[in-house]
Length: 157
Image (cartoon, rainbow, N blue to C red; front, side, top):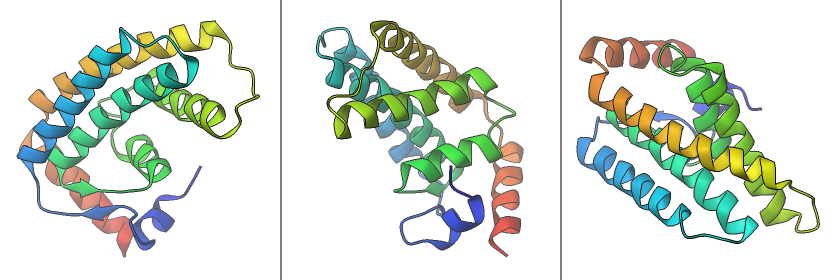
């Protein structure tokens, strides 16, 4: 994985921005639509992509609520691991990392074997991740957001 300091210093990496509730809602809607589409997908590649993006869009919705922008998926996932583990647990972190890996394996290494069980777990994990993130977004306090933003600023120094 990548390091937070690197993510804060690299182009398109982690960046504090103005909190954007409209963008947060838009990403949550994208996650919901991806989850809905996941019910109809049959191919492995699209199952993995749709399940992963359900989780990623959910995470990004929370990031927009906090006022954090990032265009590098590894950095967004590392942001979650570093600053959001008061809200998520190790299973959630493992789920999104697994989704990222499985999607990459199927997209960039078409001959790589991915078991059906992994895809079934990924589908379940994406639904759980979406529901949990939606709850976090509705309950995260202004003080918790300020604390996270302050922690990010301390890393950027």
